[in-house]
Length: 454
Image: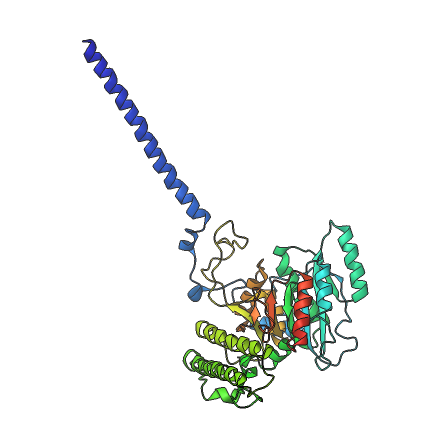
């Protein structure tokens, strides 16, 4: 009897232990399941299921044709529909004579530098390099810096007022200067330009940590559709003279309706010829046919040929490079055409569905550097009156351009990243991002200026 009771007790104890283990396993599975769900939700995996297809369904407030209203505003007339979005911040520092003093009837270029209020050293470096308004006597230009406010930092504000009094190139509006207010900074820049500086043919918006080649900017706006290909040089094996590849040289090979095949094949042909010439030139130098053409020129030719090959690969992969401009409304820079919103919540650029419900952004130009013609500036500015505010300035301009029927123009030489620097690798570079160090900017710009590239 005792043995029987002992066996019953042990069996019951065994069953209880099995139930506890089973419960723990089930609880582990449950915790793992819900943890996975929470993690996927945090990274936005389920949000994609509820996104609306951009290509077929895109509308963005104001939901309607805005062209008549924009044209009315441009004529200083009252539009039929009241604007839904206006930036009514006031200007603390206006510089109203900046584009009028000592200028011809029309300026060629105005540089608008979106600067953080505390970046005094960067502004000085820009004034002493690419922002120098007297860089080219035959290209009338102006440079302005647009900032917000630091209402809780009286020392910075006082220092800014002193800087503005000395240089007379600071425009300040009464919004808090922060990253998520960059759209306000951009649109207040537009507002100032329309009000005080509408006498320029082109406007270039630049962040204060960017290298700019003023020479290449001026060259680009002369012929945006063919930059930099029309500048590239081919060389004859038995001649020291250089010949430009003219547009007519490419026309027989470039089919404007099929750029992937004919354009790339021609660039390949030019690249192979240049590399062959370079090799032959090296052999000739060894035989003293070209005395004195050694050293730095070899490096220069090699870099240019590599640059041409990279442009060929990039052109093949990026169908969006246009060879013709649709009209005189130029909106140019580095363009993203099929970019998706960030849905993971830890991202700096997180966008919830209620803010933007579509699975893709409209084509947009990276905000670090871009060029606008006067017509594009005016149309974008007045179309913004009928475009709901968005906190990321590059996306906001993309939304405005979509509503205004302006197609952003892509150019590979607007580098939104920091392009690796060597002495001869910046010949065709228009802009390069990542020059937070003012001393580095001055060093690179002065070296490129000495080479005739800046």
